[in-house]
Image (tube, helix red, strand yellow):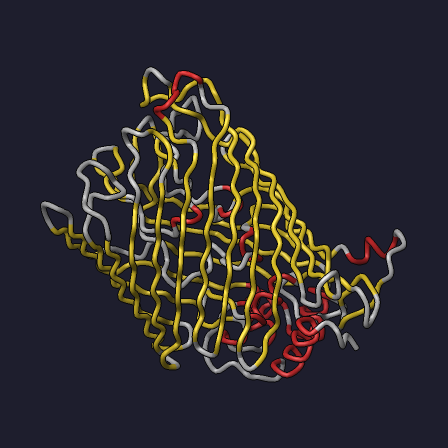
Length: 476
């Protein structure tokens, strides 16, 4: 069965094999629901391995272990209290201590963790699941009354969506279907077959299906730092996926700046929208492919995107994938006023994003990177040569599981910035991190990020030399 669908076959086989592994530690919701260890899906959280990628793509379900009766069957078998417990997970992440060196001084301080997240998630039916994050940020950076301030916030987190397998819908209109475990696939055994299409709708992050998933990296983003209502220092983030342009605005009425380091478009941490994705087997080439189409809301505009990933299989503990992306943003930001760059003009801009990413794994080594180029259109004619319309970002990352309890990570970020020529600066940052897992679900980390370029006063991208952070990542 499914002889020519190696990835799907591997998922079913692994699901059957791992379904009997008993968890010996306190682990998050999906692991409890399927009696698995965290490292079944993760090299180390939040980084997914090949099995974890397929598990996510299939709607957080293992077909061979999907309950035909869904949530109702779980309540009947495990009871209401245990089912609720298995639906919840909690994560605390962020710094404990940080030290930042700038040209004139070194600032050292103890800081609380930046994020506390409650996850509510589980399958409702074999072809329907939901996922919700509720997040608390003690020191969130927000824009209020024309200035940046830090304040505590609690609310909906980065993602909140449902995921539905539409295979049965295609079957009802005549497409050939077959069963894999308790899920419906489109196609024929030994020939073309497709898992999905899956509909993911709500507040979503589509980049999980990209070879470089923006939000699933072991070196987490640092925090934006503000002082006297202004941004003093931009966060250290993967530059490939950021806004990249100096001088843009999110809206006209509030005149909130679009920060150069904001993750935007397809690579947003989470935005309202809908994503259709499917895994194709035996289609044109002899390798599994993931096709994505979708749209996202951004500021006062919206995005349409298409992405394609090719998986070259997993053999001898190695795997390799390549992805391509094209993304068009319609009116997603406001250009600066040609006569006053501190204010938005009356012109909303369009943005084109395109690029490639790749991921290679071998045993405990995980290497991934992306090259993404952005271009803006419909700028006011008065800006003329004052605004650079193109920008590019490169991010290369490497994680190495040196020991069962020790993960070494490094990342290089390069930004060739666009935007207002009298403000823009390019950026180059190298980060190194050691993460020690006290238990499977509790880790402490030490990270040092270094600005590889000369410092530039009064520029929040470059007005620092290096930043050391000691922190914690706790899941249960």
